[in-house]
Length: 90
Image (cartoon, rainbow, N blue to C red):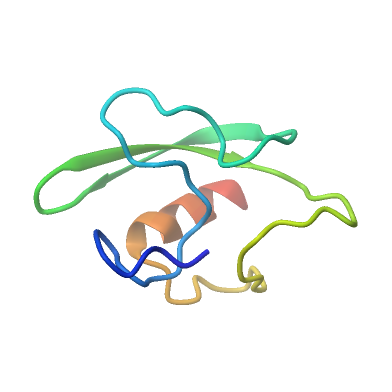
C-alpha cells in the first residue's frame, strides 16, 4: 500500500497495517486467516515501534487494495517494512 502523503513515512510504499497506536493494536488490517510470524522492532528519531508481523496466503479471487510486487527485493520499502517483509517471507 502507499502511506498517506502527510505524516510519518508519507507517500512511501508500505505493507498493510493498522494504525500505529500506543499499546496493543486492534488486529490485522482486514479479516482473513492470518498467521502471526513474530515481531519487528524499529527505532525512529522520536519513538520506538514494535510491529506484530503476520502473513496471509490469499485465495484466488480475493480482492485486496494495494500495489502488488514480486518478492524478489525490498522495492524501496522503508527499513521498518523491509524488516517486516524479511520476517514474513522466511
